[in-house]
Amino acid sequence: MTSFDLFKSRLCRDIRNELSESLIMAIHSGDIGPSRAVAEKYLSKETEPFINSYINNRLTRYEAIISQIQSANIQIHETYIIALLLWDQELFFEFHEWLEQKWLNSKGAEKIKSQALIRAACTYIHLEHGRNEGAKKTASKAMANLIRHKELVPAFFNVELLVAKLKALDPVPPKLGATEFIAKIATN
Image (cartoon, rainbow, N blue to C red):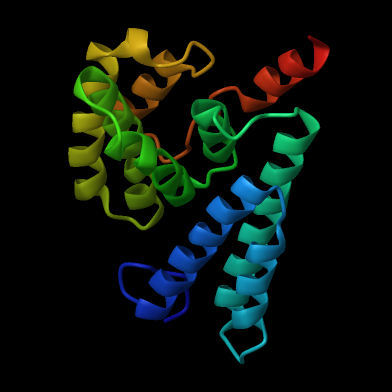
């Protein structure tokens, strides 16, 4: 194996899952320490360069997320603002994990909306790994409910852009506006 492929490697899945869990803990605590500890656990072993690269890349993006949350004084209950930050860092599995608690505790249209956003993220996970058929099916389900429940999606998400990218199965994920939103928060 020469690339980080969570669909073919248990080690890759474990690393992704542990790092993702550590980021959720880091968001809740405001401390990147849990993510650094997981990264060090794997970096201290003799692992393939592509694994080290994945871990270092994730850790850099995790640090950016924690920094953005702190600098904009975003509160932990602002679930969708944090989700937007995760999306724009292209942390799609982490986005999925972050919104999953909202989805599990929701009902009706709110649950469907959360699921649609999670499916949108899963589309990009599939695309990243060349799983185009899975991406197509997941994108279709995500689009239908994003369109149907668009009014429930926070206005700071660029839903039109997201739906257009999903429809085209564009492998380049859209930036949904985290930078602009954080700048707006900072000036208020």
